Length: 209
Image 1 (cartoon, rainbow, N blue to C red):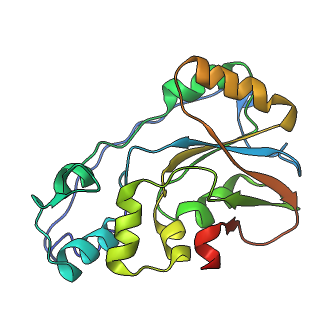
Image 2 (cartoon, rainbow, N blue to C red):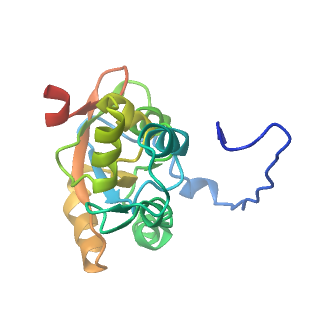
């Protein structure tokens, strides 16, 4: 992990991880993704665990806030908002995986939309995402405003309210949505897969201002 401004020269971090296995025929590789497939998004709980070098620069260095600063738009303190636990998605997606309804899955972590989505796409297609199709969380609106951050950079650094992306066949969209909604899981239809090569296209009103 890149954690600029967090560790001093002599500091170090110990981290743990888990490894799982899956039968090869059940791998979700993205190789079957094609133009016309639909991109669905599951909401995040907040900033999650990425982009905090920029967050600290904006809220502490630039704005001079304290961790206990009350932010009316958040309805809580700055610290409470930034320390909201990262949402985990197994309960949401495992039933869909068991029914073989997913062609691709993308966890929106460091690198945001621009760096994570291409990892699951085969050659010959690219993703178009409409950022007006889901509600942006107040924390991202305020970070952009406080830091005067370019919107492209916001979508490259943060999850912007979408923590997990599912790519599904157009014929399965209603079934996937119904499955999620029956379990009280919010889901947004946020884009499509189209023919072509090149970077992810993120479009919306903020890019036209």
